[in-house]
Length: 82
Image (cartoon, rainbow, N blue to C red; front, side, top):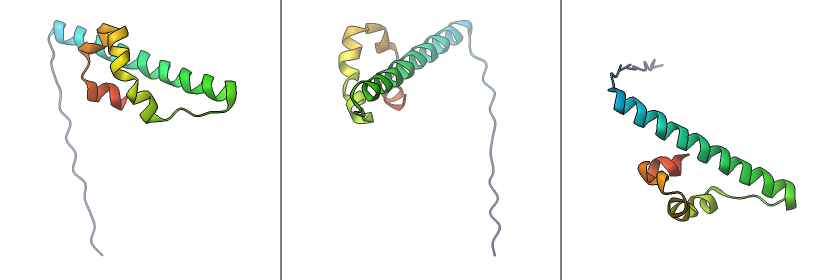
């Protein structure tokens, strides 16, 4: 029987003030997007019992970036992960 050992690393970063501000802004936008998507799913289920899939919400992202241009500051892959 082989024993597997997992090794992990921790890294400390020291962002500048502008980088901290940018990160906080992006985290805030991701939080709002997550809550908006969750609310959309809950309301659809409560209204008529339908479910909204990840792909349906993902396909709405380009339109969301047009309606809310501040989301263009967040990478598309990050928004898809949210």
